[in-house]
Image (cartoon, rainbow, N blue to C red; front, top):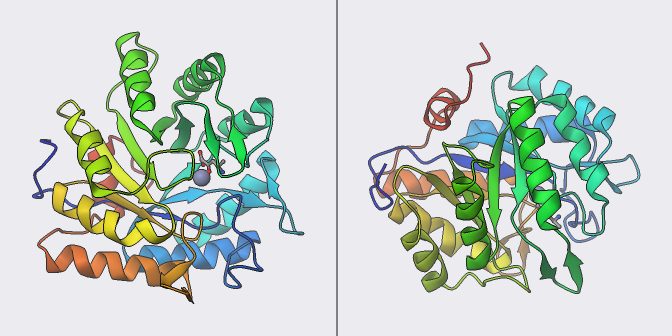
Length: 280
Ligand code: KMH
Ligand code: ZN
């Protein structure tokens, strides 16, 4: 796949909940397994084929407990049996690396792999090189496809290094998360630069944070990339107007994709494109 063609379908990911978004700021945030399952079903109807999943305890606190992930997975699979489920190994800022690795024991389709340490708003998001390698190796052991989370250009180069060493294996799938204070912003030149560094035959998408979500989604659609939206990264529909649901954000991206001649990938197409096994 060339980096700049648009004749392949766009894979849409919904980042339903995240670890940092709160009910106070986004009253429609799905927190319980059942709420997450309902939101996932709506997101899939709107065009999502991947659910990027963080879970919360009943009181809303971010959690990396596999039991809690399992409850959410069961609830989601009851409603959308074949959706691609991608578990977070990023967790919440400050979570221990041991806890962050726990969801991999569930052998999900995919898991996120963060490629470097960075300032993350007022916090520091630690990703020691040793831990990155350990997580990547564990994903490989469990047959889990990593999604490579890239917040700035140096992390992309780290990923290339790991691929050269055989620690990351093809097919590579990059997610450019742009707009975190401490990483690259969502300036369109940043996305252009990152995409220009990619080798052929990799998959890439963009997750714009806050006000960058919509413009970066449109840019990615035009450049042949995939798109992630959802309350993890952005709680607003338009400036100052809180979105009603995750699905509302997906509906708009799917609509724009079709208007500019990009097909939206079905779950089956997304599984085929990423080389993931069919569930049914
Ligand atoms: N919560 C962020 C610190 C991931 O899911 O892998 C990290 C994060 C990335 O959400
Ligand atoms: Zn996440």
